[in-house]
Length: 388
Image (tube, rainbow, N blue to C red; front, side):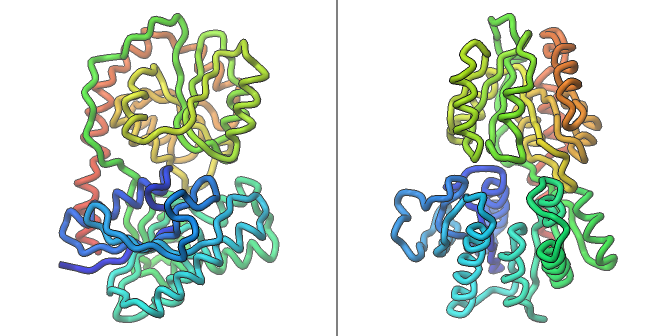
């Protein structure tokens, strides 16, 4: 049985794409007879507060579903203040250094990036000829931060670029969730071994019998996920044309309060906010909607939202409003409609051009068969294991 250590900043009971992605990675390795340990902070995301049951602890050690989990201390914060965010990342990095000093580290280590500083800590302290370091890159920082307006091209940005390049250089294998990520890495280090590791979900495909019955004259559109700055759900609520649609929102994040305030101040708009629910419950609820929307406030280089693959497995038609490689996936596999990134007039034109007969023709079973054939977690994972 091969020992493997996964180091991540996100893991259940935290919610969101990052947490789900690493859980599936860990669970897939466990099912293939790896002896697995996950090192992660005390759960705090996305609230920025340590979860109940973990408060007051310096660390926590447990075994969950056959996975050994070491949870380390972190100064938890989701503040927009860059200094506080830096302190939070550094606090986890210091906890990791302490962990490295007092624990035997296996020869195979998988490191999640971003955060860049956490990944740098791992790549710097664990670099050894006798150890294989695998860097799992889900987003291209600092480029993504620049595109989101979080960074400017100054000294700090150049330092982050140097850290990013150091991480790639010292990885024995780089996993990327998009072709754009792999192209970026290969552009810097042409000889680097890379592997396209999409964020395919791992759950049983639910049975659907065509479109769920919708007695309303309006099309029911749903968004479910993080209510963060990058997703731009508040602006979406403000910009949608509600003539022929209802908009239903699930999730939690930085924009939650402003979204609730907007709904309360516009009671005549058909918008409903339901809060956060478990992934399993959410999958059942989503089947009651006609369409889902996948938005990004700005096109982010290297990003392919994992929701694409999850919703395809549910058989849910999509409106993609994020630009980039995600558009290529939607178009190639005929999963729904595409609106030009950042163009709300075009988005409303696309939505107003959809009627229920269009949705019925886009048979959910066809979408599910596409997901089963092309977005198969098990097949991709077997290929990954052969690379490790």
